Length: 231
Image 1 (spheres, one colour):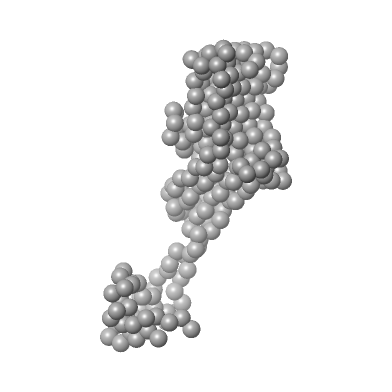
Image 2 (cartoon, rainbow, N blue to C red):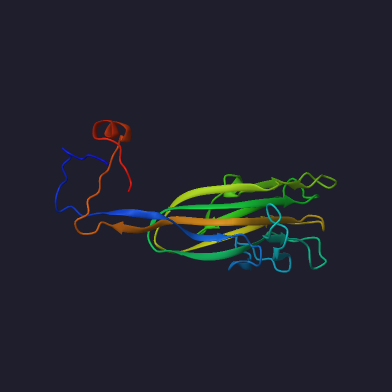
């Protein structure tokens, strides 16, 4: 047992410890969109219609499960379109402020034929703020290599970020954008999978009469007072 002889405790001090991390969101899109809703024109003030699609793609996920799929294409027969964007969006709630970790997998396909002044991007926003490290805060950004060029595919990538967020509702957008399309092969697709949000649990208060012992150097403490034994 742990011999605490000579260790003094102050009386009348209360407090609380942060609870274990809690899972706010953990979805893999294997059977549906898991509460995410498809929207068009969420990014960069775009206003195009008829050029975007969003589905849950069975077997399209990282490792073979399902995934959310966002497509920007030419569906109305016209090869020429201005800037377009689409996304899947979801709002989650935090019971308290704290350090929150968001993780997900993504893949981005940028089709052939885009010119050098045409851009395609995979974009993720949390409360309207971009989370990526590529151009304009995107996850991945590509410019065209001209007619006859090859498409680009990132393959599956993993992303993680830790942020300090306030209590309340927060909105996550997973999507894609292109600056314009002038040929039927000029299309982009973004896939998203394994989305997770974890946050601190509720504080655990000390009960009346309980005391907490905080040890900064466990090895030195054990050498002096002995090994703790959990019954």
